[in-house]
Length: 215
Image (tube, rainbow, N blue to C red; front, side, top):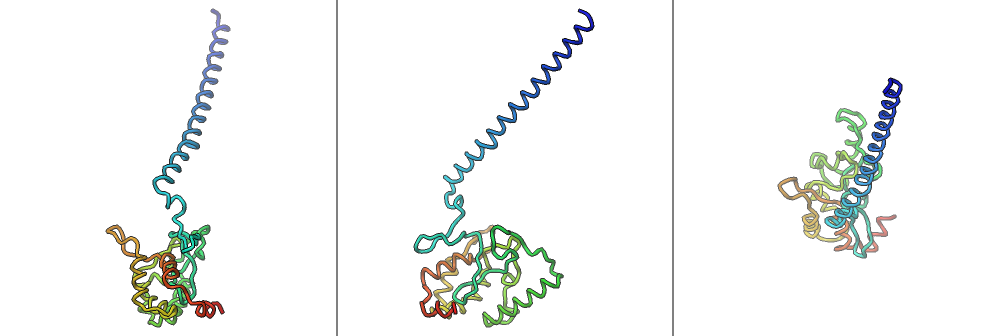
């Protein structure tokens, strides 16, 4: 066999090897696309929906009529005296814009905002600024934290009870029922949306009070 034939054979072998390498790569890519792009998401989504149906649907909260009013993991803005009010939000409680303020404690804008909020809360709740739990003034990192501390909820109980015309003990009972993370892994916190939903279910706002709060 002459040198020319050997070169042709070697070139042919290289061509076959290259073609085989490309075929293997394409086949591997197709298999991985099917497994990781189709099969894996399908299996995990199906199992998740089966094992954790509530969480898979967004952990939604419904009112007494069965209407979806939000998620237990996303805060909402409340301003009326008849409701408990959550933490400040750097994202305006918008789940599509999750963000903190990213301002350091030394930032003048943050300090000014905290001072204004503290004065408003003190006036609204009838307490001194020193009595205000820090979580009612400090925004959460996510901007949609639906929880406040137990002291922050108890601070608001007298106002809510008076605004709704009910006894404070009934409000305290609902606060206790809205506690979450009470195990050894976390400190007790109150889900504000859950609490406000319970308030509306147990003690609906009288029409006269509701009309006055909207004026």
